Amino acid sequence: MNRLFQILLLFSLIAFFWLFAIGEMEETKLPKKSFEADSTVQTITSAEFLPKPNLDYDFRWQNLVISQSKSTFKGFSKKYTDKNENILCFRGNHFRDAPTRGNLQRKPKSVTLDWIFKTRKDTSNTQHERWGGGTGWTGQALLIRWSEEMKKQLGIRDQKFLSNSKAREVIVGSLSGHVYYLNFETGDTTRTPTLLDGPIKGTVSADPRLNGLLYVGQGISTGRRFGSYIIDMTKNEVIRHQSGRDPDADRSWGAFDSNPLIDKNSGTVFWPSENGIIYSFKSKSRNEVKLESKLKYSKNVMMRYGLEASMAATGRFGFFADNSGNVFCMDLVDKTPVWNQNNYDDTDASLVLEQTTNDLFLYTGNEVDFRAPEAVSIFRKLNARNGKEIWRVSRNCRGTKIADRTNSGGILATPLLGKKNCKDMAYVIFSRMNEKNQSELVAVNRKTGKEVFSFMMKAYSWASPIDLYDTRGNMYIFFTDVRGHIYLINGKNGELIYSEKTNYTFESSPIAFDNRIVVGVRGNKILSFLVD
Image (cartoon, rainbow, N blue to C red):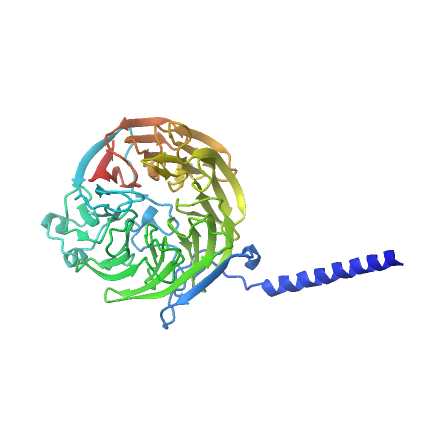
């Protein structure tokens, strides 16, 4: 009898939990949200996210609404800017997959240094060292072809530059604390530099509406103001400063190395910070810039709050990675999470999106930081709709001490997606592979996850590789390392075309237009190379 009672009780419990689970599943169902923006915004994609079950149970979030005005943000357009020839943010757009423009006229054979611009040096002491000038990580330059009217508003005086409709301006933030404005062809100064309150490590962003607004994040504190800056370049002055030492933050470190994205339709700015907050600003015009909201999140185990990786976005959805090893997707309109994924360690390399006909994918890689001195660094392809892993490629890497400070190994350079004849390839650099602190560039088939080739570098690298194409659609890859080596290889098979040892320290990511490359280096220089 007792046995029968136990069996009936067991079946009753099973039935109860089954009904409870069904009820929970029905309660968590959400209406499917399209990646498409509202009718006022250009169509994005037709893909849809899966509902909330892709969110870990302990992922908590809080949206602190600052502005009482209703947000006009409906979603990012398919095109980040109406003038695609310009490079206005880190890696060229909101997918973080377009660091170059134009074409090479023939198969390249060599790379030569064309011009050098010398920055000023900041010799003040900080808690982390003297930073000097030049550029650091990520330190990428921007490239803009302004209208004639905008050139005048910006205070450009060079008559040849003003009258040349094809003239392009380089904008780059420096460790000296300045933002410099240079002639892309000559390296000459086009206008007066903008001086801020400390070293700029990350990449600045120009407003995609080309209205003269510039967004600059500080990388190092010098005891003065520390945080992010919105600059009206027509007046060469700061019109908005957001302190990174925010009482609402869970971390007191206030750097903004992460590169912001700006929606060209609404003027909404999304800006992750190393204090752990994702800020949202509304820049209606040069005369009206307001803080809209602060988005916070947490988990039961957070190794370190903060976001250094630059976010990617499509439509109403943003993708983020942080110092604690979280990768997650947020609905930027509702300010709610969609999914999250464990990335196992600090993630500073920016996320990269790939849009196919029917799907959307996300590429990410982690470091060896918390798991130092040695661990596996992982490059992964995720389904961007639900965060599920599709494949991974890994290498053993090391976190090593340099000048009594531990520097991370693994993936710090942003991955590169091939196009044209290499449209099925993805490329990633693993840093500090061995006792010699070398890096390895690995090419991976995007569909299968199988390695196609690898290229061993002379030293470690944090700088992201860039893609160059000849008029026939053949792809070439230019990349650098911290010991001054420059490399040019065939993107299809890894064949070395050109390599040279220079006297520079490369940490920054380059850009290119046609055969001209611009990249900053540590010390006090911005360089331009020609691919011949």
